[in-house]
Image (cartoon, rainbow, N blue to C red; front, top):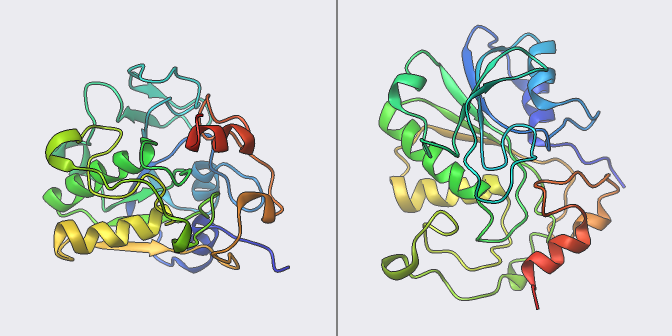
Length: 236
C-alpha cells in the first residue's frame, strides 16, 4: 500500500513562495508523515510563521472539555499562541492584519459535535472579512469518507446552533476537514473566500483509521484511542 501523506507534506513539497508571513491554527496532535510537529516542519523548511492559534484543549491538547484556554508562548518554537477557545472564538481583524495568510491544520474525528471543525468555521469567517487567504492542510477522516455511512439528524440551525454545531450537517458527516471547508466555501461564502486545500495523498475513502497503518495520536483528552472515538460517536 502506498504511504499516506498529509496536506502538510503536500504543502511542504509544492509551496514555493517562502517570503509570506503566516499564521497557523494547530495543536500538538498534528505531525508530518515523518512525525515532525507541523509548526516545526514549516520553520525547518524556511516558512515564516509569525503567530500560532490554538483551539479547544489548547496547543498542548491537555485542557479539560469546555475549559477556556489562555494565550501563551509556544515552548517548542517561541512563537506567540493566540487562543481561539477563550475570550475569542474567531481571530480578530487586528490579529490577522499583519499576515499574508492563515494555515489550518487540526485533526477531526468526523463527528458534528467535535469543536475543531467549528473553530475552522470561525476562522473562515474571519479570513473572509479580513480578506486574508486561508489554506487548509487536510487529513483523513478516521471514520472513513464513505458518504453512505453519513448518519444522524441534520442540525436545525434555528433551534440548536452552538459551538458543538453551528451549521447544517449530519452527526457523522463522512468528509475530511478540507472537504468541509470547500463545502462551506460554496454554501456560506458563495466562493468569495480565498481558500485552498492541500489534499491527503494515497488515502482511499473506504479506509478507516485502523486501515492506514499510522500510530494513533490523541486528538483531545477524551479521544485517547480509536475505541474511545467510537464510543464518542455511539455513547450508548
